[in-house]
Length: 389
Image 1 (cartoon, rainbow, N blue to C red):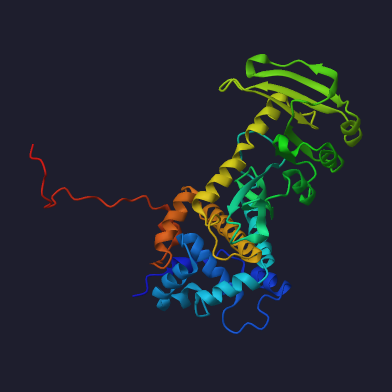
Image 2: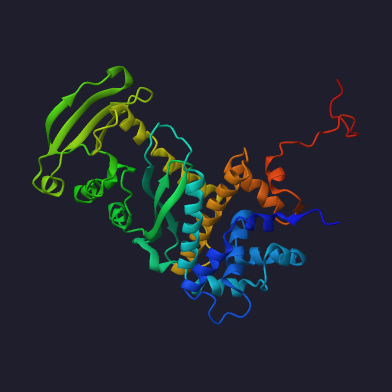
């Protein structure tokens, strides 16, 4: 008796397959391909992310064990680790990067009305990077130190929903501030960054684009105070000033006035100084916005713990970028499923459920993900007792 579709197939129903075909056609991904298409490659890599596979052999073995169900799950080509390895090495990673951005655009619309810690009408983004260590002997193209390899993930995180809306994968040697040149700035939005992104020429680009930034100031900032505004010191605020830069290079790079907010965290007693080009929001909101920047750190921690982006199935640059972008696509896909099905579970819980139920048949994916029923342990079991009270 057929009790429903395979969970994997129901999950794939949330993918815009026509958009995937357009991404493949854009880079001629299926050119002269006979059996193992780009979609088969994506399904294999997505399966590996969802079930925490550790190697190509692991992927092949597990999928071969499910061979009678593969057709119903969407697979059309025969799964071989050598074929998958060749596909990861040769097929353009931009196919999966573009498709991940399609999913990101969908997720952003779904989470656009969500609130976060600060009451704000404008969009707010946190920008930061994380380093993924690599073995230099296996990844010679990713030299970071003399005996160490690495790549950096420069990520712009939408604070409404925790959706990564921009990711740039670069060599470990690339300085964080250079990633600002890759951003497409949204007018009216807030961009929250740590002090590693203090470059006044680049920050002035936000002002010219009618966007706002909140960045932590460096201790050696050379400035001249123009105005001081009253603050409520019981909230942790210490000062709210209008300043101009006084250094010969910085004043030329950023000739406009800036706002300098001094804040002491009541919980940790640490002091923070922020710079922003927004003069409308209260000073406390500026401090609270910077506190929200921690969400991007939590995002990095989450994906490193629950997605396969620290150990790779291939050693080429193309294979690494393909795996990272498929991982991001899987993360966003799960976020879309959570929102569209109104699942009251965390992304971690949804991933754990999917990892053991991908090839099971169920009439309703939503019922599977939202069920909280636990198996009851019978009290009249016949297990021997170690102690008799």
